[in-house]
Length: 133
Image 1 (tube, rainbow, N blue to C red):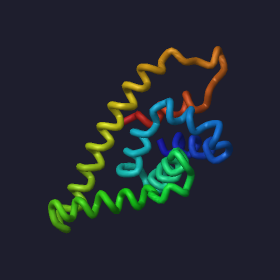
Image 2 (cartoon, helix red, strand yellow):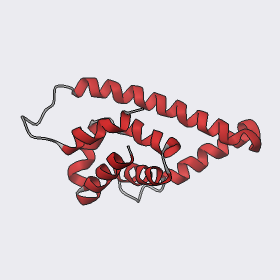
Image 3 (cartoon, one colour):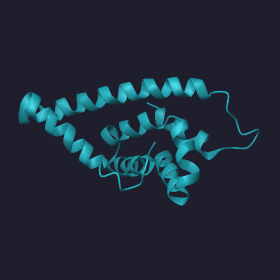
Image 4 (cartoon, rainbow, N blue to C red):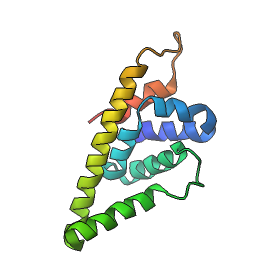
């Protein structure tokens, strides 16, 4: 998964305008969100960078992945206190991930008919690797 997200990140960095929509249409967001919570340090960083690139406007929308994680942690602290905040934040992120995965699966089912007529699309090849348990 770490290598797959690294490859997708490289593609998106090389030509964001070309690969952004392709990556989004393949439903990679749930896997990327999962990596930001459960991946290795390198996978977490790559996933955060790719999520930032996949946002509507790069870097100028004001909310980075780190800021969003901090917001979730702050909410968890207010709900369950500082001692239980990490556990609560993880549960909140997992719930968000689950909901995002459901939406992405629905979108994938709608897009199953798309193909590139015999050519290998690196995004379609790499994005599913983010769903491996």
